[in-house]
Length: 170
Image (cartoon, rainbow, N blue to C red; front, side):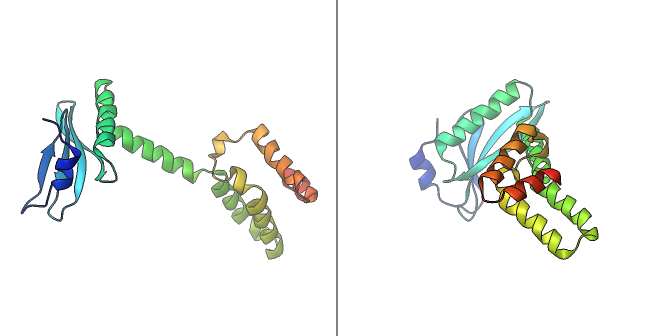
């Protein structure tokens, strides 16, 4: 028997956590304080595993079923959904640590010991105004010459042509 949205809404806390089962490994865990968590139970390499799919009502029944179906496809393809999620999170964290802005600020920090404070402030200000809004959040590996040229052209369009020439020279 499948869960319904009405049954989920009516689920009240009990003296200990309990599960409301949907189908194909999906269930809703209702805790003592009334919190409701979607879980997907599956077997991988002969071991039982669980994957968290979100909190109800932020993740509705339809969305939970779609997430379950995606996870089932991964299991069928020989991919552990839990490990896959961890790998994606690690990749995102690594990419965010290697964005243009992070690396540019590190570069300024390393170089600024030989600069006067006004020059450091001027360089950071130029980067914050003319570069970071366009490519600051991009992973450094995704930035190529055409992308840099696009940023320089935007700076040239402003009444700051001198800055565009300095940005290229530095």
